[in-house]
Image 1 (cartoon, one colour):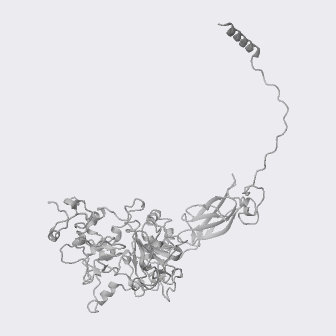
Image 2 (cartoon, one colour):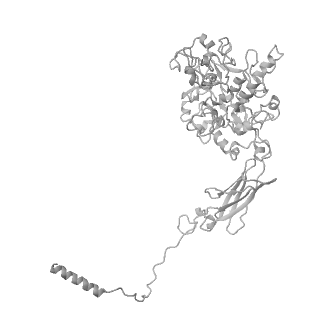
Image 3 (cartoon, helix red, strand yellow):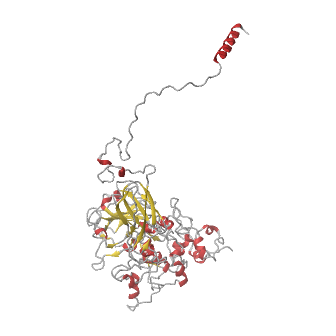
Length: 597
């Protein structure tokens, strides 16, 4: 070890000996001088923290700036408000919604409501607008309700009843029927007629009308054109403020109604979604009245100088009034006020209204409307006589002596056609199967009991056209597979088919696109013209003895002929599904069902 290291070790040892162990603490010294005071806090009402009661901090408008203007309860200062919602006939129930909205603005607070209509809610002190609502009753509002800590803070609500037979609105139905309502709001029925508000187009679940107005035009140089611009007096709409309502817009097409209540007409006024193109509608007709409310609205009553001398929104060419635009819950189930109050039943599956119902003073207002009353053309019953085209044809038959009515009820008529295709919204007429030549039908009572009840195949709360849309989250409106058909036709085994027939769906042959709503594809080679709506005729006749349409072309026969049942696929036109045609001799004799040897 070097001399230097030894020296350092000796110094370290000496330092340790001199330091020793730590001793006890000495006595505390005298207190120091007080520090400077902290800054003052601020009151809960002092929004800008300037310590001054500014006028804009009087949030409840009582002329004082104090704790009643505070919007959030301080810890331990929430005030319990309680009470009960009732009607003159007694307490209400948990379906009451009670909301307290701060009078000076802010988020509403919902109360917890019990089965007997009693409620509690915790609020900060202040003034509130309190509203109680329940389906079947008119809203009851108290303004203001002053909440003060230490006071009783009790507020009861007495809701007046909506009379039986009145409409309440589909959103009220959704309070209880949440699943059905959420699905139904994604279907096309509620969007048959849509009000335009705030200079903005209506909104839809899966489509939009962006850029539509810029494409609305009319050919003013065409023969017979009545005026510059579209043919309605108000002319071509430029902004959405020029449009009162949109007809449709959900799937096939959209048309416009101007601020006079006239449907916008001209050579390029209807937007078709399938082709992203415009087409004409009642070109050269000026100020076409809107008279489609029977089937495009809920609660329609036609204008009548004595019975209903009103027009919706005061629009000159709107031929009646309605409760809601579009086909909503109460169109099919009937006015819901009694059902909502648990004082009456609701119609689950509507029976068609009779001529007596429609010619009564209330014209069937509030009654449930059956599917076939609207999914018909020749059977449409309109103001003022409510006699349909088919009713009149029956009356005029046999030289005016009349003919027996073959329908199971007063609903439906012949299958109307135009331009080589069936017109749209005629599904019930197609099922009914009236022969236009003799006004009879060969549909059996059993066939009509199943196929004539739309609910056999369709869920009316779901969409059929969007059933395969990945954005659609509602109930299936129809089974797109063979399952729905085979549920009734259990004697048919789809595996007992040969060749290309093995992969066909029942609807491929029994429901071809024989009807047109918006667009059609012209026939080519052996392929006939095809539309954009599947027919509901179902029955197929391949004996080549009867054409699809009568000589005048204004009615279809109630059986699908080989052109549409077979040649829509079997043809030599470009893009054909199966690139060869089938000779008549094969069509007439081939076994299509269970055809394996």
